[in-house]
Length: 112
Length: 150
Length: 180
Image (cartoon, rainbow over all chains, first blue to last red; front, top):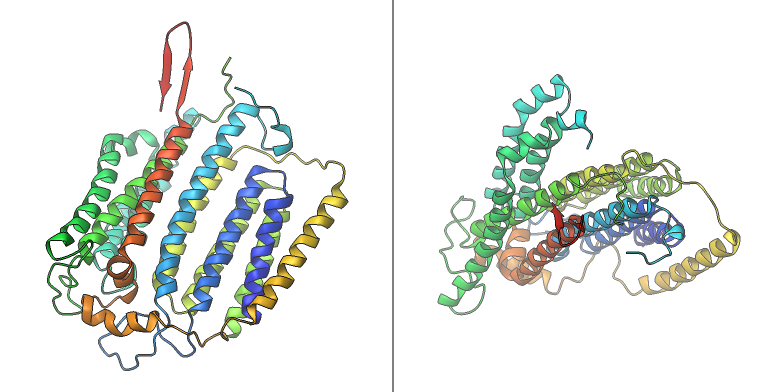
């Protein structure tokens, strides 16, 4: 239970960074941290005590494996997180090229 | 990137890159092909293959890297990966329904087992690797200074 | 399970450092440290597939982020109403935390999952697919639609990046410049 709460605190750190920071790169860092927390939470839910990884070995003796379904979901989620990060960074670089700053309070005008 | 960046990094980095880039590519292919018997699979292997090309581009500059793998080849591999995956899915129609595992099961722990799964791993690795390298090339070639439109 | 607690505390400290430090490059390096600790946590939780993928993907994300933060420095300025904004944000996060902690009482205890669908995959996986890596069997045979969806999302992201990066402009009347 404490583990779940610690994982949620990590998510709240990322959430605070998204809400309060004024630099676009800091906002992207906050989004990355929130994604890490969510992926960790998924794998935490699927863990079984004294289990082994869901891969058969030639000398398999115990069938006490951890849950394989959250791991499959998290696998695709990590790669999608990378694609989202790349798109955000491309947008941030474009904004810097146009306005000359990363500060979000100075890009108020709709130009172009 | 500025002019001296385009020539690449120092001699030490170039020498080490020449030795290790082939090994990284080989390691990525190994993880993809053994995706159904050991940890790894298409996603991790595809990212490692993309990382080997990124390593080449970071050490030698973008001209040498784009000569090894031109932009038309990147888009070809990405499209080919997606079409191969869809083709394997449609192949399931011959057995019954979409995405049915139609090829033989084989015995476990062998390289040629588990039906469609190794081929799907190869298709996914092509798509992910080519896609991520295309993203990196697009971000590197973006001019860094502020430009005026009017 | 002591290692898991230590890794989680390390991740929280690393995240706080990443969002509070002024230099952009240091903050990106701190995010890299958080990702590395996350990969170790995945290994402790017996998920080697996920650990490998997290390590290499975080490496690529670091490279892309450092490309964006080269030679840019952080403008340091605070606007008015700083205390009120921070207070409202912290109050919102506190309410969110309290509601979530009450919801966590409904989850099964850590280490004893329900696994209604997962146990079927674990028992039938080897017999029905012939693959010894159950996670690969799940993402490529039992749940192959999700992998197809993920391939589509990746393709859309590549198209999006290429569309954002291209520059089209006019130099003179009727002449269009296109650069990749």
